Image (cartoon, rainbow, N blue to C red; front, side, top):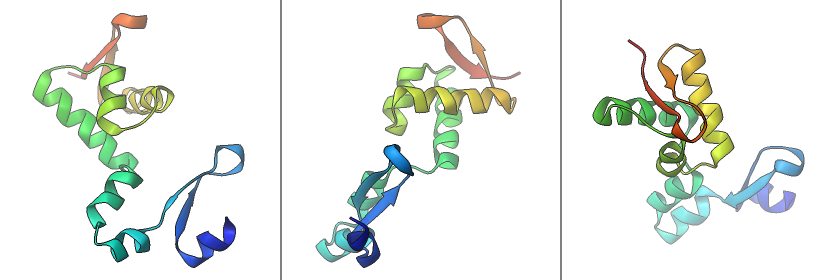
Length: 106
């Protein structure tokens, strides 16, 4: 796998047991599918934050499953993203457990 990473055919993400691999940008560029690379790679954390804040501005609130679907991330990652926004004072958590939702902090 490391030889493929060095050749630029795949990209490694993470470390240890959580390490994953995706096709490299050069593969998509060669096939003429540059936009597919961006979708496959996913969004950067800053982009995810902006997407969540924009969604809340547009719709009033957001739930974890909506963050997960919109940002194409798993539930635990969505929880961490929302917690970061709460800790930074950008949003507030309302409700508990399944009825939890998030709104912009006033």
